[in-house]
Structure formats: structure tokens, C-alpha cells
Image (cartoon, rainbow, N blue to C red):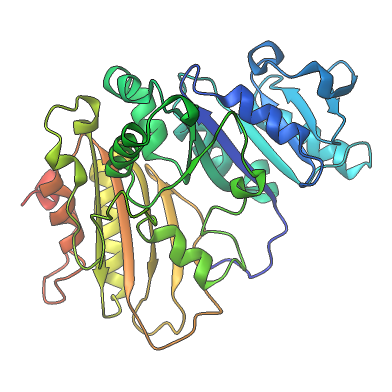
Length: 369
């Protein structure tokens, strides 16, 4: 069932990045910003967060209150209980916050947190994923991607990349790294941070799944990111299946485990065909799907909808009630690990073949060319 247009759940941002990338600096920037919304930051340990003590106003057993009015707490038990405790205090008038930021450990894959936000009954009705923000060290990021697959996954799953320590690197190196990052995640936006400075407002409202977020927000979410003139967009004039940037970088290591493809369909898709494609992909390759997202026009349905999934779990689809114009073009993006480009292209081409007989999937053959 499609979601209602009113969003009452608390937005949650997942903040990730490999060890030493600069999450601590970003956290301190968030917690010191008095002009932004009130934030409750959930970290794994206070010591790991490395909070700037000059920003702290009061400390109790579980909650650190910042001078900006933001909060910081550590995960006590499981994530659901921690969030529930914060929300209960908020509802009782004991705490004030508008948003939640969850900081992962440097070695963590953000996927399990995103799944928890979907499958936990309390979290699913109380909070929503607002976006994944990944911090990448401009100085050591390339070597980290070579050596640590966790860092590659963090990039591939991001809605926004914060390139830290950019003042330490020449422009050519930064552009080279950004090109590599977009090869892993073509729709991600990249923000360059200098000495930890950045407008924290750029971290919010990243997901196209926000109810009432509108057509522009959803389109920005599924379109290739806007690049500078120094870094030409390899997906310009997007149409059909898109080439991978990394085909020109055969020396990369862990990058070769990630494939990203997208498809544009100019005519509405039948409900049966879309369901068959998605069911087949999830059943046969669910654990390998880092993210799948898109704007889809279905036959006999007036408005398109936005959908998003991580592995085999999907957010409730969100209808775009404000859709304007006559275009009925669908755009779908899939980012996967340990799948070949041929498999992904063959899978997406199932959406192009209206005369193909639909049969129940029983083996990997349905995803093989």
C-alpha cells in the first residue's frame, strides 16, 4: 500500500566512514551548530566520538547536553531501545530534538542499521531514514578503498559523500578520487570539507523517500550527480543502461566487486512485470543488492512512486502526488556487490520485454544472459 502524504516520523541520518576519515570532526560540527535543528546523536561510545568538551553544557548518566541544545548519547543495549528511550523522553517534554544522527563504527557496513530501521516495528512507525552520509579522507581514501572492502560498501550505499581534509591534497588528486567514488555510486553527491568546515544543512533531507518530499527531491535522488567542469559526467544524457566508470580503471581492487547500472524506460511498466522483476532479483540475489531505488510509472496508475530497498527489505513506496508534466519515464538504479554487469543488465532488461511470458523464478538462470 502506498504511503500517505503526511510525514510525522522523526528523520534519521546514518553517519559512516572508515577509521580516521573525520567523523569526529563532523560530529562536533553538527553538535556545535546553534543555527540548525536540534539533533540527538547516537554514538557507539562517548570515547570514540571524541566530543569537544568545550561544547558540553551538562552530562547525566546517559545523555550529554550540548550548548547548542543538541544531545549525544551512546547505544545502551540495542538500537531500538536507545531510540525508544530518546523518543519517550521527548514525548514527556524532558528532551528536545528534531532529528537523529546514528554514527556507525569505522569498520561497519551501514546496511544492517538501515535494515533495522525497516524491520523493527517500533522504529518503522517512529523514525524514517533521511539519508546515509559517508565521510571519506581525501588524503588516504584511495588506499583505504584498495585495502578495505567495508570502505567501498560505505561509499556505495551513501546518499552524500563528505570529502574531508581536502586542504591537504592538490585539486587533481581530489578530482581523481571523486571520479573513482562516482564510479562506485553514480547518483551520490560529493561535498568537499575544508578543515572540518561545512554547512550542516547539506546533511539533511537527502532521501527521495520522504513523504511529501516532492518531484524535484525524488528526481535529484535518482539522477546522476552534478559534476564540476573538471570532472565530466560519464552518465550525461542518461538513457537506457549506463556504462560503468570503473571499466577504465583495471588496476582497482575492491571496486571490481561493485557494479552500478541504471535504466530509463519511456513507457509505463505493467504491474505484473515490475513485480516479477523485483521478486526475481530479490529472491535470487537479495544479499548482494546494496541498494536499489527508482521512480516508477506503472500502467493504469495515474501518479508515479518512489521505491527503495536494501538487500531483500524495502521501504513502503511513496507516491509523487505533485508529479507535473506528461512524462511517464521510469528511472531505476541498482548497486550490487559480487554480481556481473551482464547479470544486472539482463535483469533490468526484463522490464523492457512486454511480450515475454512471465514464469515463476526457480534458479539463477533468470538472471543470466
